[in-house]
Amino acid sequence: RCLLGKLCGNSDALTKYFAGLYVEVSRQIMGKQTAKSGEAPQDLVSRPLEIRCSRSKKVRLRPDRRIPNFPGGKERQFDLVVEITTPKGETVYTAVEVAFQETTNSVIERKAREAVTVFRHLMAEGNFLCYVVDGAGYFARLKALADITENSHRRFTFKKSELDALCDF
Image (cartoon, rainbow, N blue to C red; front, side, top):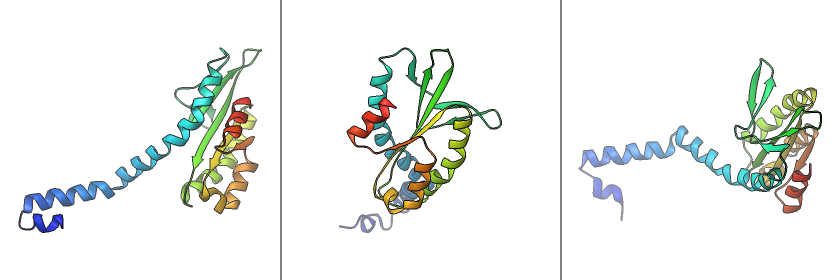
């Protein structure tokens, strides 16, 4: 049975129905849903890192996920940031970008473009950049995947053995 058939003639109910449809397809709601879908892969990566970091007082995950001293005196946020205190008392950061794409889209291209400048800056500051990427979208866009691989210290997938290697990095 068609819901619209039941609503015909009831202008208040039709207005409410179509307003609800607008909210469902609005860019803000779609963006929020897209961001939420990225949390599961990020959680999959952060859990083993949190366990590893909890074993040392000199290594921690930054709750704000930011690295200071980017051009213009700004901080930059990443999916995850590991902060390491060296034996000399210096702070070194490892930025971890997590991306799982089931389809090809502009996010893949954007991350690949950003990798070049971000990698150069982090290297100049003595910091590190790692990517955890997986999904058909990345493997369908070999150039983007190659750019990410060339412009990072390491690239990992979501396999347990690779996540263990990330923790060892």
